[in-house]
Amino acid sequence: MTTKAFVIGHPIAHSRSPLIHGTWIAEHGIDGSYEAIDVAPAELPGFFERLREGEFAGGNVTIPHKEAVFALCDSVDPLARTIGAVNTLVARAGKVHGTNTDYLGFLGNLDAAAPDWSAGKSTAIVLGAGGAARAILVALKSRSIPVILLNRTRATADRLARDIGGDISTGGLADFNAAAPSAGLVVNTTSIGMHSSRFEGFDLDLLPSDALVTDIVYAPLVTPLLADAKARGLRIVDGLGMLLHQAVPGFEAWFGIRPSVTKDLRTRIEATLEH
Ligand code: NAP
Image (cartoon, rainbow, N blue to C red):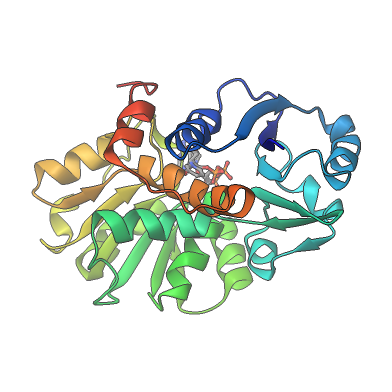
């Protein structure tokens, strides 16, 4: 019987997940499918009934359902609760389990692109305190990396630091230059970088020469922050790998094969991005 998986959202037309999973299904010759399904918020409970009846092995969840599905799942990972969002569902024996693979995607991307990145455990500057920042703080905490969390709205950063716990100090974006000399890693999790928007007043020359700069915005692939860091000779890692690596655990749970993030897969997805 064909094993079916999905991504649900509303709207859903722009999701790149069908291309990612479709590539792996073809590569492994699996009798499976992965489809994008537009599910409006009012239709979500009915969709969960289809899941419990065994129509799908599971799937991904995107905007605006990442929080609403908590109430519909039969069980949810503690880490997904800490992150406050479910992005992956697994259906088994009439029950639906919710998890979040974004933090694994972040770690998988850096581990693949810069294998020594967490060895020194030097401080990370995290820019932004929204939904994606939660997953990244959980990821950095799992590697015991101290964090300076800088956000436009300081109170949001303070709240997030309290929620996650551990070694996190907070500040505003204007504190970047003061924090830079002690940072081994800079992670942008804000939407700055999309549509060529850029951070004002950041002096990247203040970063140590071996610092790594990464951005989770992947459209454009090389954001102004990454371009500036590269021009100064700093190591950079783009955000596309996070999108690809977060897809790995879900595919493995639904189809029973752990797929690889290959150069060919990256090239296919890159071809769909704004340059
Ligand atoms: P979000 O919850 O809306 O948070 C947005 C963050 O950006 C907040 O910290 C916000 O600060 C800040 N921000 C927005 N506009 C700003 C501006 N003009 N100046 C300064 N700060 C600004 O969004 P999210 O879900 O965390 O997503 C953030 C980005 O990550 C999006 O571009 C998304 O596409 C990307 N993303 C990528 C991946 C991946 O796999 N690579 C995964 C998830 C998300 P305030 O608190 O002050 O509003």
